[in-house]
Image (cartoon, rainbow, N blue to C red; front, side, top):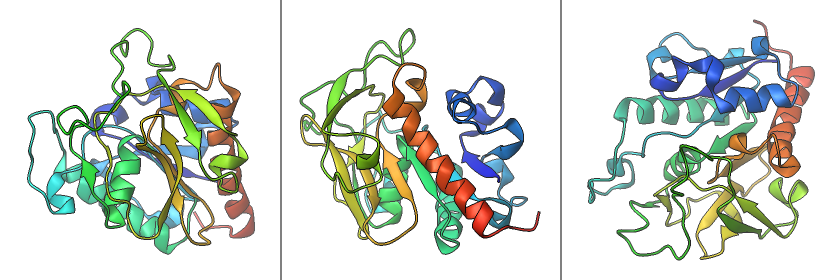
Length: 243
């Protein structure tokens, strides 16, 4: 089994310290079973080498990707990363690989499916709870607000029931939902907190919070990764890929 973990170039340069790596290790993935990739790797990676893809947090998606111009100074994008991840997502979907998305990734996936974003929750005046917690430096794992799992039959509903407290490190969010996606969790103020494929795709789950920061103390957050990894292993066993 091999999982591609898509991160910013800055994150790839310090891979051993990444919470995303620690989260996968915590659910039994070995270092050899994961590979950090970024836009710098676009020419060398082959989707055929992977049994799943995890898209991680980071820069904002360029508003041009959903037909808007940049409205606020807080919007900081990386067009090279957008181009790389849109292409990687396309290839992963074509091969029906398991996909897990975190924070930026739920927004990137939504845009790729034709949706739009709130460019800044404060400037757009749509948030009623704190979505960009102020204690990031000291306690990125600290729960900030509740989410409500709205689809108990979803993948997320299989590991979380009812409500759950999560951390929150974002200033953007899903506005118009992309075609082919369904919402599986909302925040207390009604913002989208998780999406999944609306059809029979094997596994596509994207969450707005950062479960990788919470795996040590919250079993349901660890199960998000365990569920994804189980799907990757299942695919690897069923459809062995030549390396």
